[in-house]
Length: 266
Image (cartoon, rainbow, N blue to C red; front, side, top):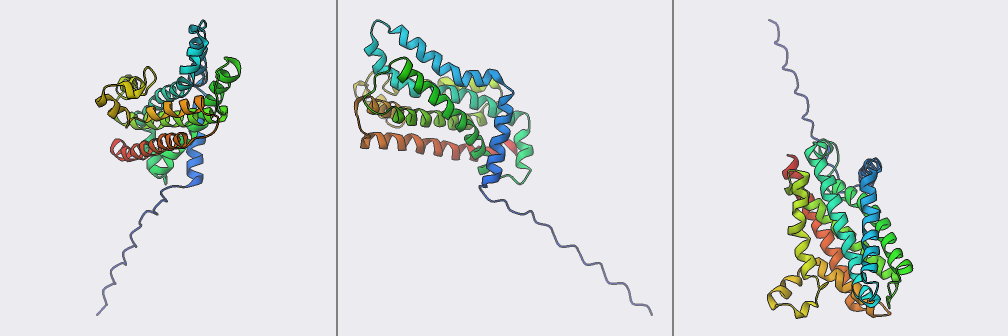
């Protein structure tokens, strides 16, 4: 009597190797890919680099007969313009990645959501550094913006504002189905902050309800930080608070943007 053959041993189940939440190599690879793509789009690069400078140039000569007015609002707009342009470009560029299926393919690879968001933030952050440096240099050394404090502090706030615009653009791209819809988010996200940030009138002169709303909007602290540099020779505690709030808001919005990736790419 023959012994029946033993049943084959089942192969061990293969479990995917978990990826770390954040990897420097994967993050830099993502940032390099994004920068390489942007390098083939000269119109986007021109928008990022030139529009804030052109707007500051026009503003200076709009107030040609009243240069003190330019001094009063030029520093604030030095932070507002980079935020707006980075918001527009980032939201549209990220939306293209979502709708084209690029994000789905990337997330199918050993690439964490943290790597993806950090890579985008790093790429657009590098552009934000160049953009903010150009706008600050133009305003201070060519257009004669008179600031009491250090121009380097102006550059710091302008850079934080550009990074905040990048984070907001990454976040709102999750809720748009087309590039037109991404642009439509600008009145909802940017314009209320622009009106309530203290650019047109001091925030304590507003209606108490609007002042309370402005107290939770990050652009308010960006404008306050610029005004601190405009009026004080040294770095003040208020300036440090304002800069930390803007940076913290940018990090918070980036985390929210990472949370939207699963919903949009599932």
